[in-house]
Length: 167
Image (cartoon, rainbow, N blue to C red; front, side, top):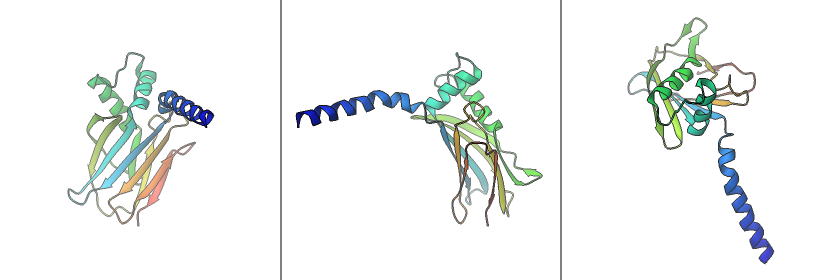
């Protein structure tokens, strides 16, 4: 019995010691694209783990980049993400998303964009390459909400563009 208790305590301590190491290995982001019926906009909210964003800005913009205390670094990272995310409603009609803002909330870095809903959107083509140029194992998941059902697009491996039928 004593051996089991010691083993359990060691397992818990080992897990606690490894948690910070594992945390930086998440390399995953979630984006919500909301067709908002109240204001007629398509709203986009990107959520990155702050720890991932910290590592990314240092690799992309240099070792002095500080996403936690520098609004300038935050703005540069938000623009980096916005430049690598796009939505098109047809082959020749990309939506011009506008930057609304960005913020740190607990352990996440959020980036907000929106555009007026052009109406009668039957299909979406989505591109989400943020951090995938840095880390090939990065997985970006996009959830489309506010329509009849939630649609999900997952960007991993060599996937660059995903088309979704919204009907």
